[in-house]
Length: 374
Ligand code: UD1
Ligand code: UDP
Image: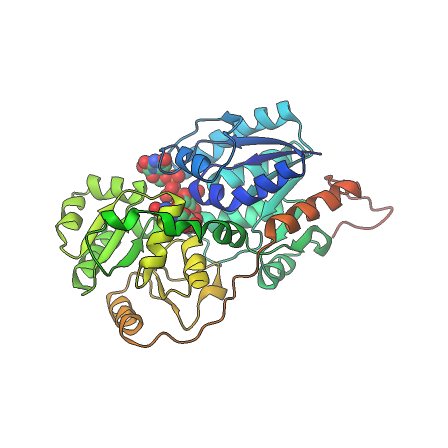
């Protein structure tokens, strides 16, 4: 069997790392392509290196641009690459523009697409990621769903059950592989506060809207706890363009740092008193660490993370200030880890191999003489 993976951003590298390692362990012929959506060393090559991944076979160097630019140029370039490598299947994880391009390119070439972390839904079509999720799932021959809830979302969209397997949440394997080693990270030596909360903010709907970004900066100034903020390049660029970076750096309770490598970031998560984030993966890691978390969004495609320790606040001053006060002053309640157990990479590869061995890793035409497809 020959698999071609398209992995183009930080969270894809993190969640795909154990799956790639399992693929190589099984001696499956594997090609690693990146569209180049993330290209800074701290967001891409640094992770390839620290996660112990092989270098990509090809970098399509698509880079940054509008939604349509990224998706269409990646689609064009991926068509040529997939055709040339002619794999038995293309696989990708998550909901970025590169993932949608990979799904569409594979589907149009009639090469099966395997979607990992399929079936997540925020039901918010204003998010580019939601559109990417829905369309990628509908271009997939195999859908590796993290949970029963995500499988149900797929069934409700009439995706045939035989295409779906619940393989578990891909963050679990990589998290457990690295969390113990994170203790050796020296990152806290560069943090000026003894106690701190950890903040990340990069979601398009939060930072492209400059008014919202200004509100968030004003809220940060009103929080009475210290905040460490590894700033995403999207957020930094917009802050610089709108003269907001100086306002941010002037806040005495906020320390801005560069995006961190995985070990160092896990160490910061572990050492923090609470986490404020609009990221998907970080809310799951917070829950696995039992760390109180404020989700800076109005909805989530991961409703299982919302719990007695993880609160949906959006960018809303009153909700953020009252939630942070609650989690910082009250005794932490008992919580249940809803994220899942390790073994996800093995289950994912078993799922793909079983389909391949049974001759089902194919895009088949509907045959009305036998059975209608749907
Ligand atoms: C993308 C994904 C998002 C994911 C996030 C992970 C989409 C629609 N969004 O958002 O779902 O959560 O990655 O971090 O696919 N930039 C750099 N250097 C880089 C990459 C980006 O400076 O290496 C800057 C550029 O100004 C660029 C901006 O960040 O325009 C946005 O990058 P982009 O990849 O388009 O989206 P993300 O916000 O990173
Ligand atoms: N992360 C990291 N360094 C950072 C910020 C995040 O290693 O400076 C990791 C984090 O631990 C999580 C993943 O990146 O596993 C989340 O990526 P991101 O927030 O960019 O994307 P999302 O999960 O929202 O798609």
